[in-house]
Length: 404
Ligand code: ADP
Image (tube, rainbow, N blue to C red):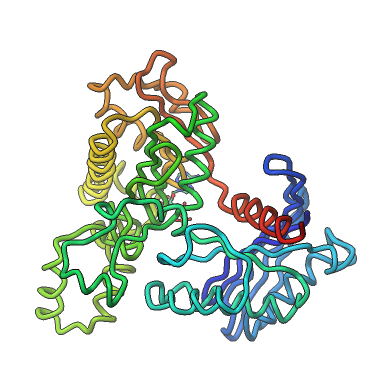
């Protein structure tokens, strides 16, 4: 089944076209990104599998025009990978927030759209853009089924004692304030793949998945289901991130707002865009930049790395305690997959529990790898995440079920 996977932001559309033969047998036909939608000049970078990237710059008025451009590239007479639009059998959309409406993926209909719209309140930066993307796709491919796959769905198995906050109960009943988590498709994918790699039965396992990228979240996965996760009502909670502050004493928020006369929107921007590695270092949100600075002796860049490492260690420690043990720790995403030093520093702290670390494999690992020694009581793996594949699999299953 040929499936177009869409990840739509407010001014961008990331896409992949996959030919799915089965869950594990598939090929990537093309991928790309449309950027700067609605600005005077936009662009599309399109890469057909095995060929060079093609970049076109042109004004892209709205998401519908962006989707049309994507389709044009896919059927382009020279570098196209499809003969016609009709070859696309389904579209799968990534949706950041599905709240407690969705514990799994769904085929788009009016009811589903209304619920995604209600969830805009909890993800004001993301869900409105996803709605634009779905509507644009419905206009350009009206007869193709559309499926929505939620970042929050995997976390819906959390027990109430892990998702409730210590606020008056009515804020939960009136405003749905509770922990929802994020990066769920990634946590689910790497937990399953990591378990397979080390020969663990996922249905009888304790796994901690560390998705460490620009945004970072850590999840306790017990018997294949989410038991707890570090992101909260929004993706601001958890360890310190690229530009997000992560967990802070909540009283700091009104304190800064009063001191500096900030509005709620300005404070939200400060905590989401100007904090984290960027705010603490005063330099960059990117760990690669900070590594260069730290090697030059910059104390604040070193401090950022220490704060991050220790927050990851503390969260893993808490989840080991919560699940009363751990069989496997998985590292994924930009930092988790590429930063051997971070993995080493984190894992060394769990040597007292019998984690025997494979320093050599760790230093060389970039793709999938097992970085614990064979006799380690706790296994450790690096797994490349692939959220698009999860979206394509779910889309394929739902569309096939609907056809039966
Ligand atoms: P996002 O959450 O936006 O998808 P990523 O998962 O790409 O972000 O993570 C971005 C972070 O990962 C940055 O701090 C960056 O330094 C780090 N990173 C990404 N790729 C590499 C790499 N090849 N080598 C070292 N660090 C990397």
